[in-house]
Length: 242
Image 1 (cartoon, rainbow, N blue to C red):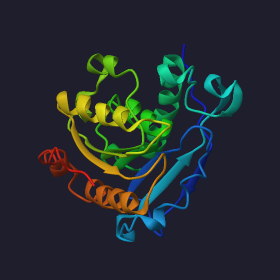
Image 2: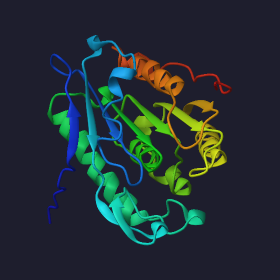
Image 3: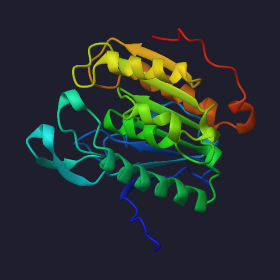
């Protein structure tokens, strides 16, 4: 039996000319695709890269930790101690994100020119989906997030993305997704051979301008020409942080 996935609604920003790359940006719990839609002009990326930005809206669902309130979420959170373990919800959202990647490929963007980015719960989904994606992607950006179900990654990881560039950043005063959780994710990924560029900032569960500029530099690197050479680059310095 053939199943189809209904595409998520999105907010999209097109470059001035034909798009040569795409960034799919996933919002956090309770937000929507408009949350980061004002960000691209602040990234400092040259218009010559011709990037299409896609900001999807997560489905609306009851979230247990918020007393069952219905809101946009990529998966349910049962408690703060069991963060991110709604496996069926995560896999449903991963399928929806995969459909957005497939649409970008259908619109003429090679997978190596597609980056996934996300904040908080969106960062969790960017990591969860990107590290399992069958075709090589340009890069992953995970802000104030973590990798859920990390114990299942070794059996499910895509060989095509084992050398994918990863940018992770976290606030040292984050009281929503603790800083240590993000740092442990970076350590686990590095221990299994992933190339993680880690940055820390003296902030809470938020995004700061210094971080935005770092994201812009990262996306410029991974979405510039010669993707084959990008995947062969050496691992960033383990102590890279700000």
